[in-house]
Length: 364
Image (tube, rainbow, N blue to C red; front, side):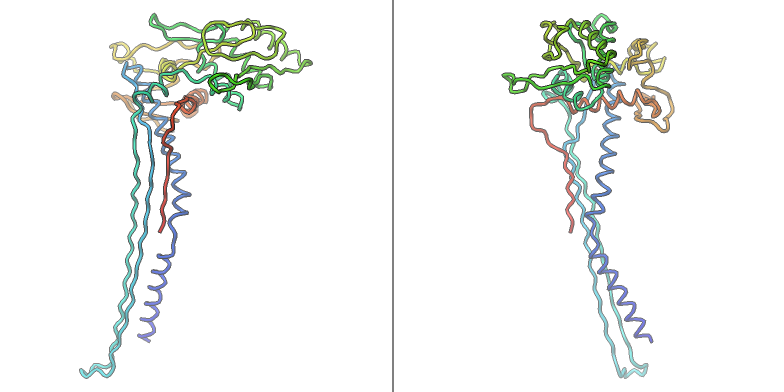
């Protein structure tokens, strides 16, 4: 009976070792790591953008740290040994003796390597200080992105009508005509009456973009909005398609000229709506904020909140200079504005090959 129990124990040990050696760590890790790295990178991007928005109010230089590469390496090594011996006719008089020996070993190694790259020099200028490429902005609108958000946050002027702006002389409110243009563009996009089409290729190799109105002739409400938009922009009332160009000067009745903001300007506009600690503003540690819009636009005072204690259940939060700053997870407008800023980073045309994020999972 003792021998049988010993053999059973040895058999169970062998099975455990074999199962450990056959278990694959690759597929389960891929399933888990893709989600966890996705969530981690998204959260770090939100906090980094929020931090820079707050730093602008403290008149601190903005700075971005990019994630260059992620390499996650895992290994699992297992081994086992089994041995048995039996001695019969023991002369000591104690009878037969049996000896069983078995052992196992396992080694798990997790060695993630993450590289960081500060955004400086040419990369900083192209990614943060340069105006958003007009082509990328309008192709995003054509793909379904909100025209209202892109015009409100990303467009500086359109055919001479100017958006709100921070100037050396202070804050300048948006022209009423610009506010109405943004409203009309949003309504036309909602009824599929506004499109961006490709025309002949320019010397740069990119196709000429055209703004086209395709409202139904029997839809009198849409036709009235198109007519009002053309009048505000000084366009030819009889045409339905207009060339898109970059610039602040009006080029003619057959062209729509726009200027876009840089990401630095977008961040400054949002920074002006941070609910800063009153003591920091009164003591001149922080710059005063911007007025809230009363035209139904996206901006309003208190888009980013602040307090001494760490908030719970936020969309994004960061601690800076002894205070907590956060975006309320229930504030849909603020979350949309913040998500637009994150999207705008991907729209910057850097004209160079960037290192892509990589997640490598070798299995053994």
